[in-house]
Length: 471
Image 1 (tube, rainbow, N blue to C red):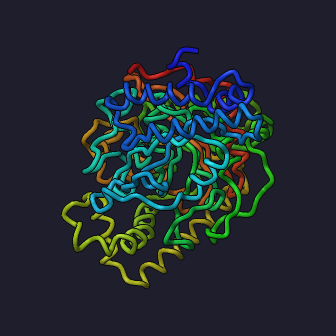
Image 2 (cartoon, helix red, strand yellow):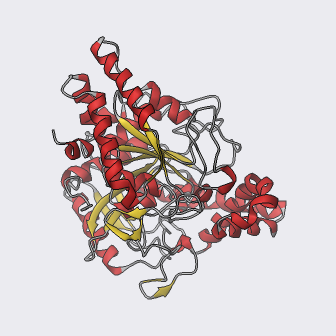
């Protein structure tokens, strides 16, 4: 198989071929590293590549195959981790000058589980400082560019991860999602990004174990690969007090059971958002295709309004400020202005303000809960418009309405960090400029498998994986 074809082969197929001895882990890893050497200077998806270490891991994986040892579900498959995720012995900067030379001595839990499943860690992908915005750039590594148009952003904050997967620089990647940071770049780069239910994939290490809204999840080219990673990563861990009990589900085996009889609502603007007309048309057509698979689709809004934006800011500003406060005296002048806006907002809030925000969040959940008593799924665009020009933090306007903050570019993603529900983005078309558009599928709380089933059914009905960016 040609090297570039290997680089665009799914993780499911790579793992199967390695188990059957049709491919070797060294062959796969060498192909991916060669493509990174060629393509990464163009897109800047990786900020750190550990080629020698990855080849050592691949050789050990190959030896295990030769010895007939028991192989994990990701045996020999290359994977990347976001530069917010600690990796023992591999530089992890969080996109911040304050941690430019930081090398952790402990793997994050998702790294532990990927390694235990046999994955080969290729390196770290670029992120804005502490994941603070929906475009990926920082003072250490610069901009990550969209593989479909290098003059456009890759999204954020897992922009490096999504760009890497889209460009064939590893089949699977890890991302994190506080406001849409898995789904935003996955949509912008034309790949799959899944934010599971809060707690489905445990977080460790962390400093906030109780009021956080950040989810970990997979960024992949196929829904099957996302389900494979869920099988590896899901399950409780006592280090995360929000982690959910095991369900016993094998996500990879269960996603092909179909969607006939499911009830879905379609909301093209959540009742308040400005949305590009071309995006509306593409997503409406994608939703209509699900009706042919046995899903009933009604147009309905879940009950959000413009006030959800202020609520999100009031909830997350104190979380960020508490974590970042020790850095401000020394590093403020070298911190991202978008991050500083969040930190400064927290200084105007009282403890009572913060607690009242949790009351508003609870009331919002009750509204959404009632909505999902009627529907199994909610279908929306993932982003309000396709990727905008690089060098900006958000687009100037959407559908003729001026944009004043980044949340207006991704009004469909962050509300479901407030509610903790599972949500996935899958590619559903391209604009006239050749930029990807994503369909977001949201499910009931804890109904991760239902969301994956719907995404898989759509993937089979509207295949996209053969279309690749020209690099």
